[in-house]
Image 1 (cartoon, rainbow, N blue to C red):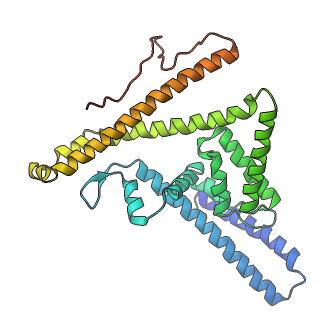
Image 2 (cartoon, rainbow, N blue to C red; image 1 turned 90 degrees about the vertical axis):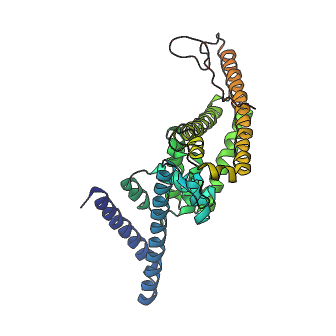
Image 3 (cartoon, rainbow, N blue to C red; image 1 turned 180 degrees about the horizontal axis):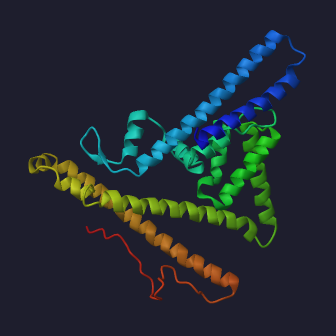
Length: 306
C-alpha cells in the first residue's frame, strides 16, 4: 500500500471516528431509525464534498499540464494553446479554470490533498469547495505571506465551525480593520508591505508566463506563428490572404499596447526605486535592470515595425 493511500485511509478513519462521537452526543435522545437516517445523510454529504474536492484537484492538475503543453490544431486548422480548446469545448469559465489550477498548485501532491480533505471542523463537518475558493484570494500557491494567511484563516474556520459566508465576512471584517489601522497610524509599512509583496509576486508570475509563452510557443521555430504560416501550402495562403493579413495586423496592434505598458511599468519601477531611496535617506544604490557586471540598464523592447 502506497504512502498516500495509507494517509488517506488513516485520515478517513479519524474523520469518521470524530463525526461518530459528535453524532452520538447530539442524537442520543432520538429514535434509532431517525439516528440511522441522519447518519446516512451525513455520510452522503461528506462523501459528496470529498469527491468534489478530488475532482477539482484532478481538473487543476490536468489544466496545469495543458498550460505547459505544445500548441495543437483546432477545428479551423489554426495552431492554438490547448487551454483555449478547454474553454471552447467544455464551456468552463476562465475564473473557474484559474481557481482549479490554483487549488492544485496549492496542494501539488496527492498526500497533501488527502490531508486537506481529511480536515474536519469541530462540529465534524468537512470543508466545502466554497471555503477553499474564498481562501484562494491569499494566493497560497505562491508561498510566503500568502500561504501563512491561507493557513491562518483555514485554522480559524476549523476551530470556529464557520460556514463559507461567515468566513468571507470575518476576512472582510479583519481587512477593513487593518485598513483603518493603517490609515490612522504611521508608519504604514506593516500593512503596505504584504500588499506590495502580493502584487509583485502576481505581476512577476504573469510576466514569467508571458515570457514562457513567447519563447516556447508564439515564436517557436517549430510551432510558432511564423512556422505555422510557412507550413501552409501557397494555394491556401493565397485563398486566405485577407484573413491572414488581418490576424497579423491585430497581433501587431496588441504588441504596440504591450510595449507601451512595458515602458510605463519600467517608469513605475524607476519611480519606486526613487521613493525607496528618499524614504531611506540614502542615494539610490540599485539601478533597475543592472546586471552583475555593473553595466547600465539593458532594456529590451519588442520591435513593432509598421
